[in-house]
Image (cartoon, rainbow, N blue to C red; front, side, top):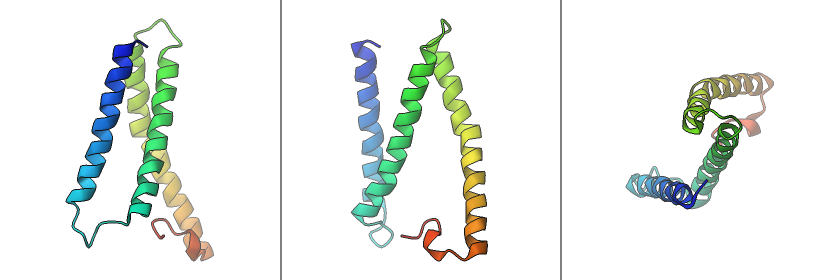
Length: 110
């Protein structure tokens, strides 16, 4: 990857983070999460996105095919099938937690 590619990725990272900050500041004060919880939620999403991004960059470089097409294909599969698997997993774990009565493990409860 050349310097221009790294620059573009840096600009996109700044835009993404700025969007999250703008969204937080636009939320009504009574609905706004505390900074600590907001940071935990945001960093969890950022680490997941970074992992997928670097995985896609690595995988798209393995073949002689167009790396942009492979990156897009991996991204779309993750955003569709990956999200479906995560959603089904959360539903299953939530059901198990509810049936066992483990109130400390309820999703979204801090």
